[in-house]
Image 1 (cartoon, rainbow, N blue to C red):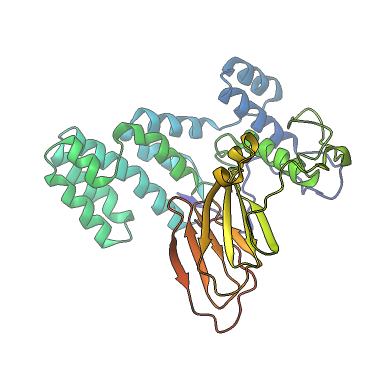
Image 2: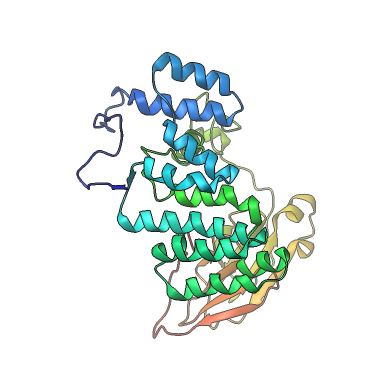
Length: 341
């Protein structure tokens, strides 16, 4: 097994340093061809991908990587050891051990499911134990031998059987340099990132184009900014200091000097002039007027505060599910991390 040297280039095809500030700088030809070939395979065009690879002399994946993928997806575990060694480079010794653990855990569970308990225990001792860094985890795996049915095994191991092979491949891929084994659907991911950049930089939907497309750049347009009020909401009893739509666009929330929060159903606001019908929740309990609100990334929670307490409200029940009371003075703002929920 080869471990990457920090100063060693990852790719078997050395890439030129990219000048990201120069719009006329050439993209790395090898990387682009590999990405296109992979994308053609993903789109069900294997002959086109093969033709591109033959004409360019560049393969999206090396032969050893292709065999490695096939071994995992087909469950050819007897060949895996040699294929794993032939891959070459891992980022570190720890990544190499982690990759082996993920692979041989799947092999062990498949042996148990097929009733080959002696072979499974042998694999546990010879393959899994050397690469398992947590004894408790090894103990939990060994106890799975007592499972009486495949259903019990799957439930206790939180495992989906043979269907887990694709997940195993994705997990192992995270330990292998991307220059050796391209991340799945890499070109599609880059194109989605490009579209999101266009969307953010052009302030979509305030653009000349009514929909996102890879075929042209979005252009900001003042004419698309709403200038006519479609609804005037009058249910608060004092000044409204903050409004915000949820990320999914289903709800509008308003915070007022009257110390209340109103969550509005946007679809009902569109269809009906009856404001009361569109009021999903009226949230009360703040001691001071409200000047900010913040939606969780999945829109399941709404937090607010302007006194010393941050209150978190459930959008499922409309109730205060948690209060954070560690501040000693007014809380004037809060925000959620993108990964939080």
